[in-house]
Length: 137
Image 1 (cartoon, one colour):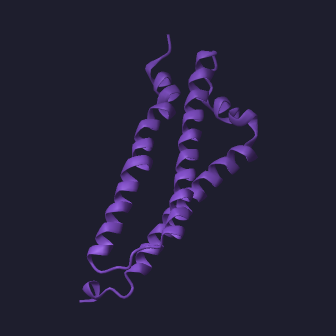
Image 2 (cartoon, rainbow, N blue to C red; image 1 turned 30 degrees about the vertical axis):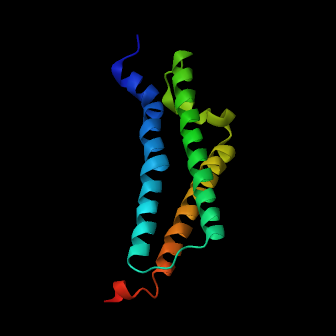
Image 3 (cartoon, rainbow, N blue to C red; image 1 turned 180 degrees about the horizontal axis):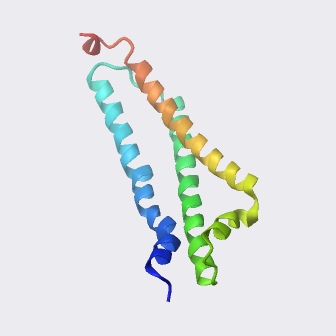
């Protein structure tokens, strides 16, 4: 039987999937929608559909990739422990077949896509409020 501390360490990454999925898939999109709605209420310009769609797609692709990577990491840990490996450093190093470049690139690309999409949305909202009279009062 696996000690409780090792059990938690083995399942921790898989447990985190639920919270990250809710944050990336629900809370952040709802917050962006609320910001867009309130920017219109205070007199901001309506965002153009084409750039908005691009920013949303960038965010969604990055968020989906990040969640997939988290699921992969969680299952990798759980299956490695079930196979008898209890050295978590070895488990971490064996992800992506031990290819650190692939692991780093995967995480970097997913987070850059997600961050750039969200940043572009925030900048679009900011610039839509430039000439708003209700904000400058």
